[in-house]
Image 1 (cartoon, rainbow, N blue to C red):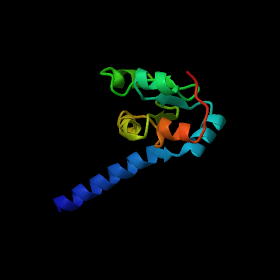
Image 2: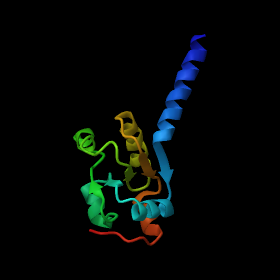
Image 3: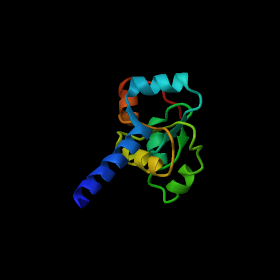
Length: 126
């Protein structure tokens, strides 16, 4: 009986988290940024990475590796959509789970990250 309860609880939690977060590709990311001005776009890379490649226009910079990451992310509006990206999707995937656990209602993960954005010839800003 405990195994069934545990499985049910695990499934319920997975479904709940899945409803709050979604993975996007470059085209979906670009479309969302063009169509929804309420999106909070967050670049999770280090300052050195951003200096080397630039960032997507309008992105806030919150370094995922900074010890103050949770406190900085907590300042965002939990009721507005958050779109996260990093270099290739690793940090943004982990961060999206954290944001959902913190109570953010809509979290989007640009899974290809800046590497994909640049490969697709998309514009960046310093």
